[in-house]
Image 1 (cartoon, rainbow, N blue to C red):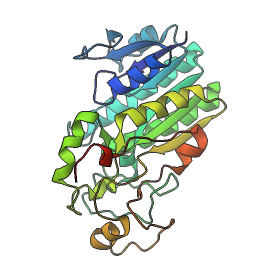
Image 2: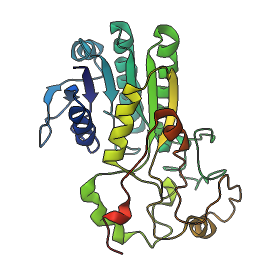
Image 3: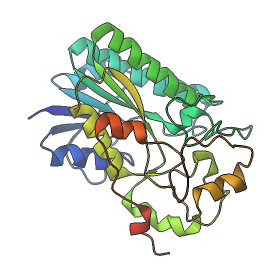
Length: 282
């Protein structure tokens, strides 16, 4: 049985990721700063900004999945957010590489493209937004995600450790579908995330596949659902909210996602299966 250490397993996404690995026969250790409300596995309380503690919790692991972070911009002072998110990720990858761990998955974000927390109403240059889209973050959160992906490249260069950075969209745990009727007909709502979402269970399978796939080197992948979170067709959303954006890289005839997940499907053999329409009465 392979051992995987999951950091931040007590948060919104963590329980689904833990459950995914447990269901596939992994020995799982959760590392967090709090005990989860409904424990699924052993939890150790640790400070990931302390490199010594990180070495301790990663010893004996075959892989590490790093979810822990300040989860969005402007929750804390900018320097606190950047220092926590960049330093904890550096420590995780530094310790994992030195310990000889072969696989790591870190949590990047759609926020790294800059649109999500923009104060200047930044628009996408084209849609769907894919991994090659320019990134212009204005906030320390988005910047920390870019730095973390560069840290992944550095560790891979030095140790050869496989590091997958998942640029995760808006995570929706199952209990959150009750909120959808409040925004699915409002084009201005959720425009900065390009109306994207990802069911926590589908995100969890992407994390597992990122550990199980071999020879990926260092790669960044968008993780989002196949469709938007809106009951308005995607071209209509763009026409109403981003009329100046005319570069459409794919044919859009229905409710297709504007946050491309094509590369994750190709690289991981991943397929999201949860659709908000199956959980929301229209």
